[in-house]
Length: 211
Figure 1 (cartoon, rainbow, N blue to C red):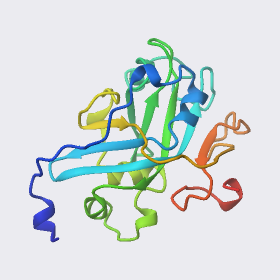
Figure 2: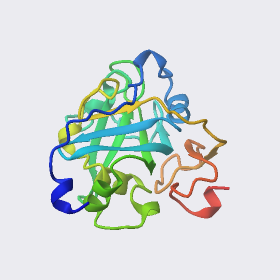
Figure 3: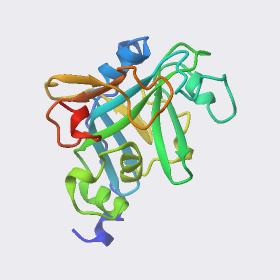
Figure 4: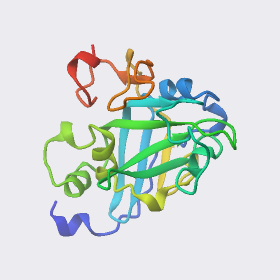
């Protein structure tokens, strides 16, 4: 399949079933754990791109490392939406990050999606990322956003309904879920709020964090 073929619009829809908001735990850490093994689906003009979530981080209520810590702003207001909405921001001016709002409306907290195991649309991901190696397509939050072409236009979208970006039920048995400190933060750094699928080659971070 050439690049020209990939750029032709496909009419098929994803067969995945969207996650019900009612099924999402109303607690940020519990939601971060729950999302391991679910599927993130991106609908692009050239086709469906998806991946199984294998790594998350929780940024709970009152978390000094969270973007909601100092209250609602124009930038972070999507974190204060009802659980199951996208909060997308640009980190360091280079990489977009996808988070899932995780509490009741008006309470700011969220779950960072850190890594995916690629599923559908892998040739599209390779074009979006400009690399071939499967393991590195979506291993890390900036990489997965680039692979799925997630940007600020998706900020605030409802992830519990079909659309340009949404969450779907997992269709595989989830293995053992590990827990560790979060990556790349200085405040509240000792909290064990990172969750990952043990044994997955698609998880990011140092080997010592993934035992």
